[in-house]
Length: 142
Image 1: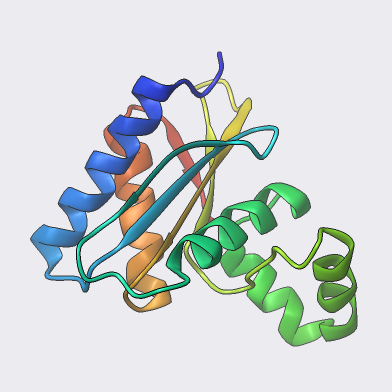
Image 2: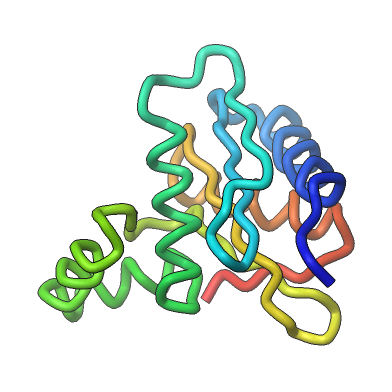
């Protein structure tokens, strides 16, 4: 299975709905396939400048290291030089805070990642998980 456009749009819609229901600030949702290609992006009205790059960096970081960006943040706290080196190695596109979540199918195969930004990092992550689960897929935050 691949992460196709229809599934990506379902993830985006689910994440945005979660954000609205929870009263989050305007979100930007970036969905990448397993190869790191952008499949879908939506930026809500009022979302600040630079949010696409931040969301993409959260998702790309998760793909690059095979773990959710919450775990990357913990790693950055313990191994700052390593995360700085990886950030450089992947062209600067790694944002080590919660909001980047891996997407897996029911059998555990990696399909891609979602990066969300706009509210607190914890809320961004919760919206990503909600969006992934709304598509019937599994969210990996660690």
